[in-house]
Length: 356
Image (tube, rainbow, N blue to C red; front, side, top):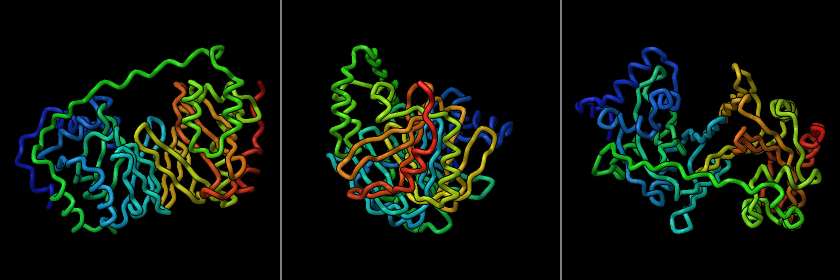
């Protein structure tokens, strides 16, 4: 099945406005176009229906394992300030929790999927300056992009066609039933937090994956907890140290873990990084299988965080924006049951903390 033959449908006013904007600014990315046109990215993609885009049924438990048949792909997950791109095969996929949670745990593509927030799905075959670009694009109920899967030159086009035929929606309506974003709950003032209970709970951690639950138990925000826990466990760092530590990790060929996510998907790279480059305000990793694009002026807070576990203390660097939203995390490469790399801990601890 191909989408390129479906061009008989009249174009929508939104699609026409998009194309006019691209004539003026041909390098604009879809997210930026949506912002300029005051629509969501999902609405923008839906305006392509009947042209080069097909709406698919969001049957994640069946669809996600079937992506392995595509072979080598590039997966992209981003938040407002950072884009994480990783190439590999979409394999070792499981969907659990009554369809609310998913995992992809292969050595190359590593994802944590919070599927209850996944709302709409499109297959896109878009002609670009680099040729025909095929992708699957997932959006939440606010129309924000959650996760995208791009075919590469090594991908299997027969499987692509089969996926489109198997999962195509009968109703190719552009109606998305978007909802307002949930109101972010205000944090308690610092004086209302029981810092003694927080500290005790922190010391009792056995697994870094239990950290979020610990925050919830103590009714404390993530960045707020870092401020309150004390310097044994968390220390503020100068934000400009983030590119420096990644540059040093590259120089040492130190295998690290780079986490980037949004509310509904977390994507992880594990391994060394090599080609680092600044482009304007963006700090980039431009490796063959891993690309990262980080807008450095958006990093308002940088913290060195230590969490106890049954494998010893686990050290991370965590970058936050001005609203306290997590942008990126760095760890030393490790698997459950293993202590963290001594070389990573040495590097992570080298940078002096900011004075109180």
